[in-house]
Amino acid sequence: MYRLLAERYPDAHCELDFTNPFELLVATVLSAQTTDVRVNLVTPELFRRYPDARALAGADRTDVETIIASTGFFRAKTESLLKLGVALMEQHDGEVPGRMVDLVKLPGVGRKTANVVLGNAFGVPGITVDTHFGRLARRFGWTAEEDPVKVEHAVGALIPRKDWTQLSHVLVFHGRRTCHAKKAACGACPIARLCPSYGVGETDPDKAAKLVRTAPPR
Image (tube, rainbow, N blue to C red; front, side):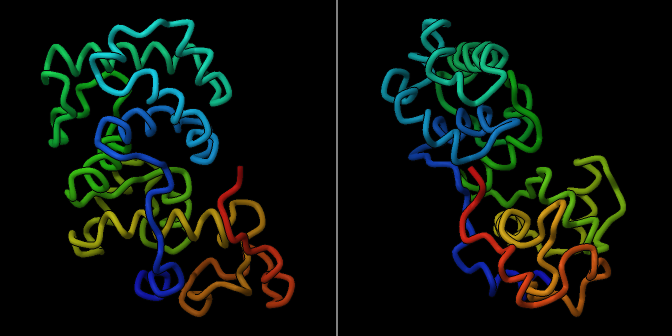
């Protein structure tokens, strides 16, 4: 199933814009409860004004809130970002650590965020269990677990470690473009014949094809 999906989405990648580990970490924290597209609209200005941990640690709270307001929960996210900047300065000399054990100790950073950073900024394989990944893993019959950490470990036992990061991208692409939560395009799915959940969505090929998105929702 993974091989067929990887063939469907050969360009699957992290859809957050970043140029270094710090930017990816901040963008991932901002991505909670919003879209990557929305985050990408606000980060250019955020990174222009606060390009590193030192700048973020000393950032003006109101200014940050104004810049990221459209991402939702902006006060809580601003609090996390300011604390994140301070923690990076105090604990890691302003650098983003490249180990899970260190990342998850940072404010606003859990395993999901840590795996995004490790996999995409440091080349350390990791499975990122977001809403799409968890939903698809259960639909595919790969696991019945609901807890993200349990899903991560269950799927990790099925797929070679070297493929974990790309697997995460491929499933997110499929979840955003074809295997939608409410109206899956089953008739346009490359793994229809293998999927135990075939039929939860539109099975007519022509109707299903119209449900397929070519880009993530805004």
